[in-house]
Length: 261
Image (cartoon, rainbow, N blue to C red; front, side, top):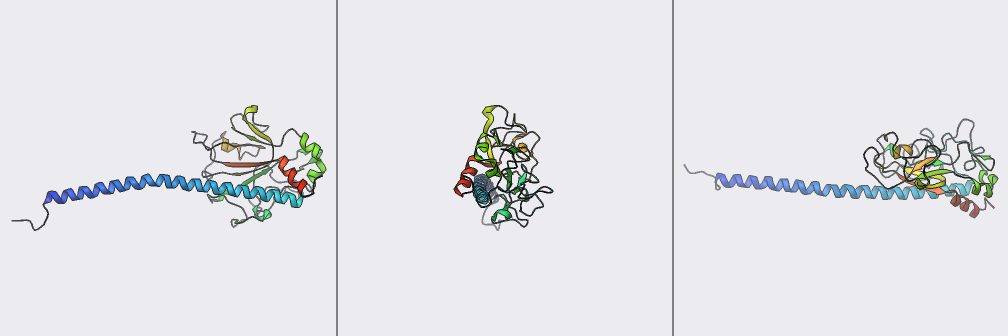
């Protein structure tokens, strides 16, 4: 009996194979395109985060020009406002956490803020709140404790004392030899005169940095931070975005504002 199908069995099978091949090719093409698109998205997020860090830096300098001091870092529970230690306030500049706090977005008047008053970077998770550290933690400059965060502290410290101080916050090119006192070898030191540091924990912010890694150094609570290009090194991956402002620029803004001679 003749088959009622207009195509022989072999032709129909061949057509099914062709369809499968096309599906495989399309799948490969789609997966090949996904990687460049993901890379472009990450690049855009990094660029947007750098812009946010630049805006934060200008806001901090504007705060200093308006108040004669830098703000204290915020804490998780301060709703984006400055966080002072017990008995601390703007008159003594005693912050609850000088070196491992958050950017006080509400105090700086930044926007947009999350529901608790903090600025998040372009990755947008709660862990991606922008961080902020400021020189202080009880250190004296020209006999003035917490000179950067107390009202008129920099004026009282005098320009001569600010220039003579051996170091403020350290920025290192690697955390390999860094400790709470500095970067180790001089070749690892990018600066030792940062008045404040602003940083994003990057795309991997939800992960806990491996102990001893460069990323772990940036959340250690010490006045020492690491900045270098992104790295995927095993056990020491790094995608933090770090920016800082030298003491000289803070002084320049205060001089321009008439708050320093």
